[in-house]
Length: 367
Ligand code: SF4
Ligand code: SF4
Ligand code: FES
Image (tube, rainbow, N blue to C red; front, top):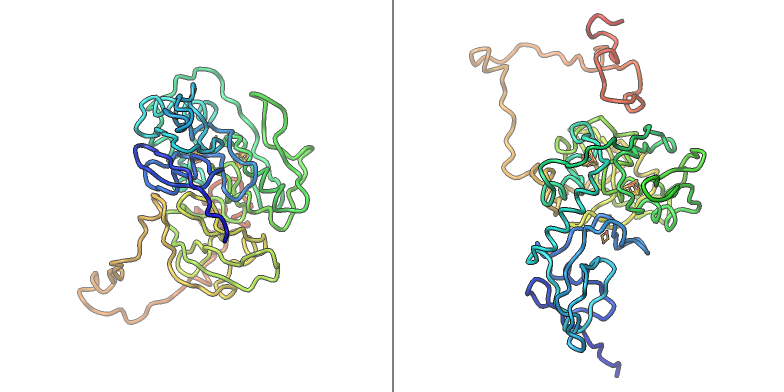
């Protein structure tokens, strides 16, 4: 008979849980769920070697184990520290941890730009959530911030290095998912930056996943950027029989009406993708006919997107009849396909900012 595995008993914020030896404190907390789960900006359960970079997951170990009950002398990164039998951990019940996390957020924001109003990640940004929950109201930093030029790394991905928090997730993704990694963290200390040496293109059939794993808006999808705010889009689950055998073909389509604005992998409540998808599904299948739509996606994590629910949806009010004193119009013309206002002069996904009236031929008298 197989020997039964001994489980370790751990207490996190006074809540007991039993986990297998080798489990990290973070994953033990995830087993409990709810508010006791420390935030994690660099750990990603699907990527080997991730974690230990950002320090947002710091916790206090007030009792090491039953065998050695001494507390750990310093706060520890919960994503990298494994549990011991009888360990006692404090996360949100420790003022010391909350204070340290506030300091970590302040450090993460030292060089961060005030880009949220124009950033594509806004509304689904881990750093935004973290600053809201743990950040200070104002910065004490008085020095010049680091700035970088935005660069295109490949046909589909734009890098805004100013927003990067150097979590290394994109580097691990490229390393573990694609055949050839062409980018990494260059230089050291405060000069560190994500780069492709001599600005190579990232061109690999799974490289688009770096966009999904990036916790901030440093890596954005060039086919979708600036086209819409995420909270105006409806996420729906969809799948297709993808020819790439490594791709699960299960995605979320971000739609407005029948138009697909972007395609992403499906994410769980911790913001981690359930399964990675290939670049063909992500960047090239933007027609509803390419997909079998399963239905509305429930966004499990607390987010502005989950406010766009589908229950109690009302048909929009028919205003034309109302302004015509209750009469139906005799004729309504749909000029959508013939109006030049709807035909921009340039490919909107290629312009370097929001679309402007001059990008359309017949607005403001511009020909
Ligand atoms: S990455 Fe997040 S915090 Fe930074 S500008 Fe974009 S939305 Fe704001
Ligand atoms: S670009 Fe994004 S995923 Fe890559 S290190 Fe920076 S923050 Fe992390
Ligand atoms: S999530 Fe633990 S150090 Fe970043």
